[in-house]
Length: 123
Image (tube, rainbow, N blue to C red):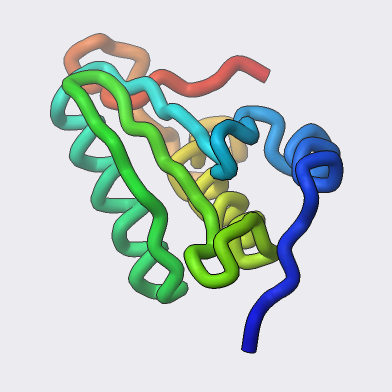
């Protein structure tokens, strides 16, 4: 069964409303996560890999010492579908999770450069 793809205008509107840190470029929705170094880069890659395998929807990933780029497009039918938005939202939720902002028992990563691993977006 071929899934319906969204045209660029719909993708751009949904990204603005649902995933403001993602962009449409070259037929893919993309997000670059900045890290504090190799440890953070590997943690992001592993988190994305786990989510992709659980969803059985696999992004393309590029990485360097201090960043990870995630690219999503549904390969068959070769376009952006609801699967791409769903996985992007889950990746954003997991990678961007900051438990210290929730006010619960988990305090989150200390504000100390020795423990920094991901550069969280502001606002």
